[in-house]
Length: 305
Length: 262
Image 1 (tube, each protein chain N blue to C red):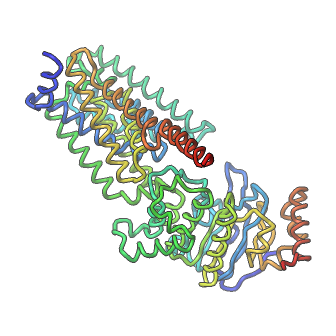
Image 2: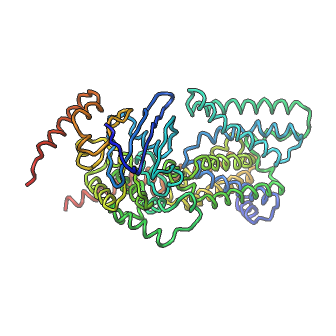
Image 3: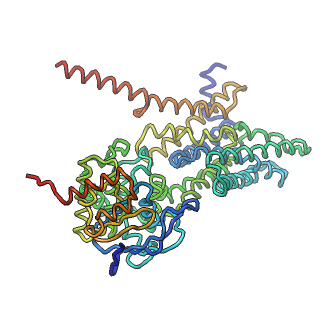
């Protein structure tokens, strides 16, 4: 089959398996893209990395307790571990002289190594259900089936509703936390909302891109989107669209060639969007330079006249 | 010298704030009369911003209590507007000038309502007062330092408060912005509002304020400017710091022999 017949087949949405993967990754992409704006604007990119790595031991423990690879149990385990990570980072930097960045790195490595150890124990436990648990490391979008879509859909709706309800609160607090506090908005609620949304979207998002690349899905979309708009609402939409589009293209690339992994391709496409935005958007580095040059030569001509 | 105030609009008792068990502010006691324009003056690291943040409960206090209108902050939040230092936020945030000023119209209980025409009118009025209406649709990253400060003040004006607490509103601000801001403050005072400003420039302090608090970890003095702005008290506040003392000398000379403008 040549490229165009592949292309037509893929986008004719005739294949149910492909559709499941496509819908699943798109919904997750959009969810993570939305949450991404909160992450980037609250400057929590590092904590996101700690949370996503911490999810591994949670998933392992979820599996050890139930003995089955039910996405709901695994996600609950993952969310609990993510919450532990948030608490740990906060606790270490509060009780000791260790600064926040160091305590993030410590939490990340401790929890991730714990996860790898648990993963090894599970692999040697003889439970035949365990095969495929390692997929959580790099993600395996191809394994998304219809029952997963309900979970993704539920998370998507939850994230959207939370954002709609707390839209104004988040907007005010993300811009100026001090002011928000003085008008009576709870800082704990703000932090809880952001951490909660990150944990939830991470716990399900790792299905497509995996633990190691998860932070990219929660950082790059907003980083790219913020170059294109000065409007909070539009930033959220554009960020969601970037992540969705990357997901579709990533799935398409791995459909074209069986050797190509989906998750890493999603992130590669997403990073291209981010780089493109950083250089060539209206606020981009190159665009600004070109504009400065044009202005300079215009001024020169004015002077000559 | 702490002047006693009858029926103060803001009263602080035994307020102590510590950072990492080091005291940043010790045992502050003072009151402020309604309708005054108060300057909070002291050297760097004297605890000026700390005091302001403690009043707004942005940082925890170790001991003491603070009363606005004889009540706790929680029950009178709506009557108090706070203007943080403009460096405390990221001005790349995706919002326009008008978006920011609008935020002054929300409170913790009115987060879910839609802003009415009246709210928008109040925001526009606030922008007009700080001469920023033409910039309403500009993105906030395109503003100069002085314009950023004026946007912050407009947001506070939109709150329609009775007491305004401002942290260094004149720091890093151009002359035109400073003039505009001073005019806004005078106008507020004429409307009977109380204004409390952290200020670092002694030269202009004497000109702007009618009540002054001198602070250096402790409250050195609090009272009408003519009683507080004296060489002895200023020296005590700046504890023999040479460059500042010179500045004080110049300022006081200027006060005693005002240069007449023809």
